[in-house]
Image (tube, rainbow, N blue to C red; front, top):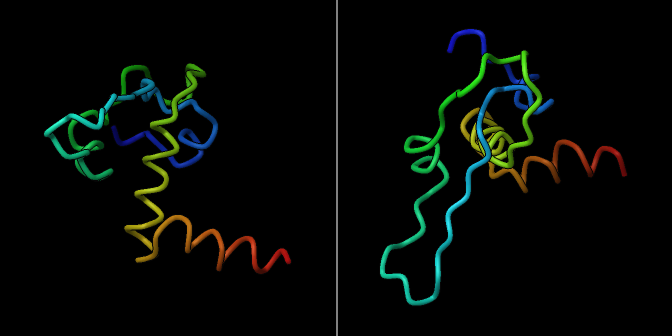
Length: 87
């Protein structure tokens, strides 16, 4: 939706439901990339900014946004742009 904002994802108010899948050693299917998981399961179930719903998937979406915008992995971005400047 057009009214979904980064602050909604950060505050767990994006309306994105909690998402998880289980993969086991014997599974033949390879774990899908984060981008593929977002494509498959990333949807807004509640109006953004209206309901607080804990969702690890909101953080995963932020991870992908950071990677897409910065061209760096989330870990590299956080290390270089946040933690190193903080000392």
